[in-house]
Picture 1 (tube, helix red, strand yellow):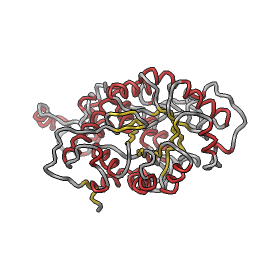
Picture 2 (tube, rainbow, N blue to C red; picture 1 turned 30 degrees about the vertical axis):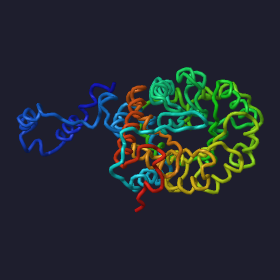
Picture 3 (cartoon, one colour; picture 1 turned 90 degrees about the vertical axis):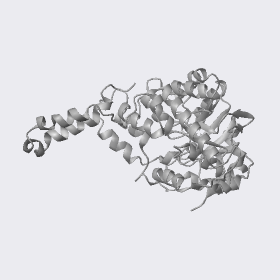
Picture 4 (cartoon, rainbow, N blue to C red; picture 1 turned 90 degrees about the horizontal axis):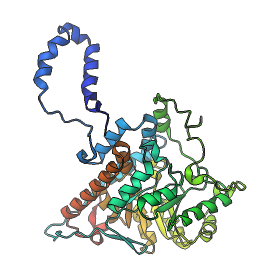
Length: 414
């Protein structure tokens, strides 16, 4: 639940402004406004901040609720992009720019939104993308997300730097999740540590490694630093001066240090991929692909799926939206392996656009994090329900009874 005073924020802001205004004195003081206030009091006020998960009508309702409940710097971690936020903004702008071609008089009484990934059928193509440090947003963190994923049967990927150990998340989920792998600078940083981390996820039952490759050069998260400057809490008990939470994350604890391996840092190349593939029998996906050339290399190096991502605009300042990169990547892959996409997806109609442009599945990050921050497990469930319902409404509206009916012909290019 939100703090009980949340819905009074705008009224109090107005009264503070009024009290400081010279107009108040000239009008005879606050008493002069009392008849107006009394007259307005019985009227229904539609507040921007929802008070429960079930009241949220769309994803942005959850965002506004999270903004007033999640600590400022932690909310900034969710919201930040890089540089001037152009890539972050373009992820949304490009999705909103695309138009759907609506066909009429099509029987849409029975929708088929199922998707098959590696022989496993899921009821929708909506996946949960990895994000670290989820206990910064809600006390139950990744456990709440895992329980929500289980209750709604969505595929979940867990971050290397999660604030909850993979074994605990799998138990909450009721089955093993996919495991997202960082190597450096936020991962183990040595070959011994990397292989031990993959082995730990394998021992926990995780069937798939999602190797993230779009943070080798670091990221210039200007907005995050600005959020931190206005957070008035004392954070030194949990964080180092550099801003990172003190001590290793649960999944990294106890890993062998080994010798730092430059090949797992900024000098990582495609030649590293066979070495990683040979270190495990888990399925191996590369996340962070944004060009057809790299998609073709994924196929050449035996990668099991391509994950199109710019890290939600948090890793690169290229300005390229994932929905714009998706068609060339889907063409390059040509159905040989699945294609997953994320970054900027906020509506069910966005999910439809992602599938129409060649994705097998669409992963969401901020939508479920806003739900988590505002209302815990119920908020995550509400985010997933909203996206699923909107996707179904959109498919019926455009005359597409199944995901197979979506394709390039579904998109009206501007």
